[in-house]
Length: 194
Image 1 (tube, rainbow, N blue to C red):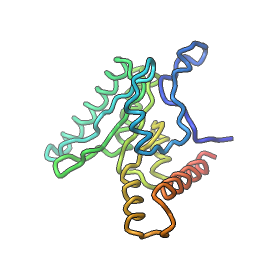
Image 2: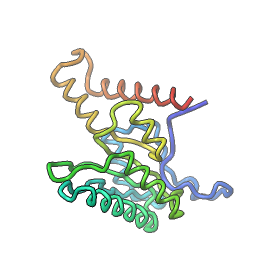
Image 3: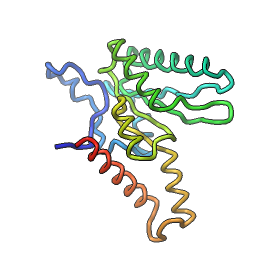
Image 4: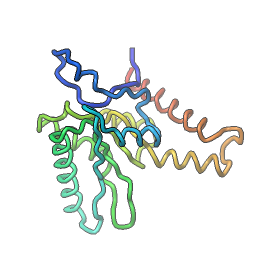
């Protein structure tokens, strides 16, 4: 029996039952829309606070810049957990000619393992906001590396463009295309899980 719904937020001690264990956000789809991500980013409730961490780095700095960016991302994640944030959004928004994204698998895996070593991993859920993932394999790898939910904003932009330019069947709206895309990805993820 497998399912794709999950809860975001601090996990707490598995051997205790406290009211704090209920302070989790249920997400029915692991692939979240832009509006769902906006709601997650706006969370500021007791036990449910989110923080966005940029995964961008300056290309001109080369390999050194990438290493420093990963150090910064890990340090920001640890500090956010200590400050009481329970959902961390690793975002590559803002890519331009001068700034490139740390590959999402490296960012998620790096933060996940750093927080395990730091003893803060169970305090937070990781959400990925990235233009990279678009296929089932991409999503499955990100979940395997520690992501709880993913917002593939570039895939959504492509879907929107396809609908607007009538590159797909005319009767399909953007909302229908979006739901079809999410459902197809989730079916693929369930196949991999089973």
